[in-house]
Amino acid sequence: MPERKPRKDAARNREAVLAAADALFARRESPEDVTMADVAAAAGVGKGTLFRAFGDRAGLLRALYEARMDPIRQAVEAGPPPLGPATPPRDRVPALLDAVLCFKLDNRRLALALEEGGSGSPYRAEHYERWHGLLRAVLEQVPGSTDSGFTAHALLAATRADLVEHLAGEEHIPREAMRAQLANFVTGVLASSPRKG
Image: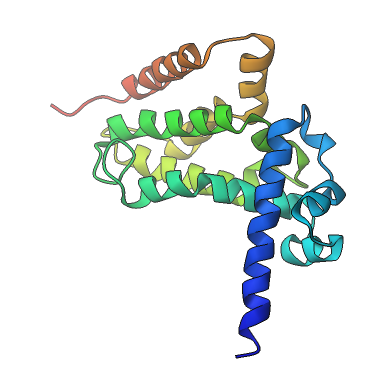
C-alpha cells in the first residue's frame, strides 16, 4: 500500500508537467524559448522531478508529442476509414499523410522543436520510424507499387516540420490549400502505380 502513493504522485506530476509544457509551447514564439526550468516552475515541480520523469528536454518533447498524437494513433490502429486498417490502400495513404500534415499544422512549434532538437538522424526517431513503417506497409498493398520504402520517405518529406513551418509561416499558404496541394502530390505518386483491372 505505501508504494501506491509515489506512483500516483508520479502520474500526477507527469500530467502536470505535460500540461505545463503544452501551454508553454503554445504561447512561446520559438520552441527554443521553453526551458526545463520554465516547465518545472509552471508545473509546480522541482527540476529533479522533471529530469527523473523525462530524462532531458528531448525526452519531454517526445512525451508531449506522443500524448498529443495518441488519438491519431488509435484511429490508425483500430479506427474506421479513412485512417483505420479497413481502408483501401489508395484511399488510406492520402488520409494518413493528411493526418500527419494536420497534426504538424496544429502543433507547429512542438513538431519543429522535436525534429530540430534531437541528436542524431531524425529518420531514426521513433515517431518517424513508426510513420515510415506504416506508410511502407500500406504502399506495399497498392497493386504494382515498387520501392515502397523510398516512396514512404519521399511522401513523409512533404510533411517535415521545417517545410510545414516554411509554407505556413513564411509563404503564408492557408491550411486548406496546403492540404489540397499535398493530396494532389500524393495522388500523383500513387497514379504512377498501375491499378488492377
